Figure 1 (cartoon, rainbow, N blue to C red):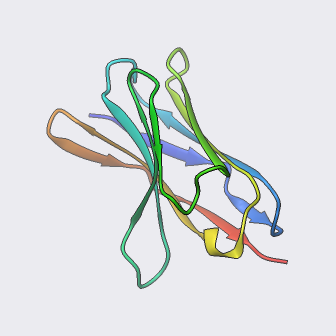
Figure 2: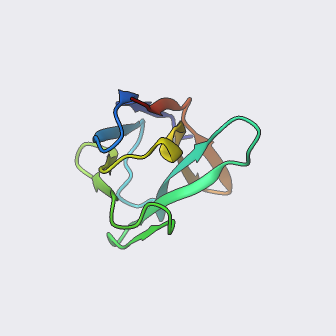
Length: 115
């Protein structure tokens, strides 16, 4: 099993920055991919960014150039640096991974972008 715990959410003004962190309960070195998703009430959960075991990354078009996903294998941590935040980025952000035929999700962290 893998337990994922997110932190770093909060209230930020438009144009501001936040860094989300995801702490994994086991080594992420051999996990194929780690993701960040987000969800707003009444909408489906949306894939925001993925980082693969080789360090390659993918981003949703809506966050390209503004968000950066990274990881620290030694600390079993995954990060999401969010810059130039917009009101449309307001959501609950979830850390996720798929490992040994199971999906694992964190509890989520709220990000609110508002003046």
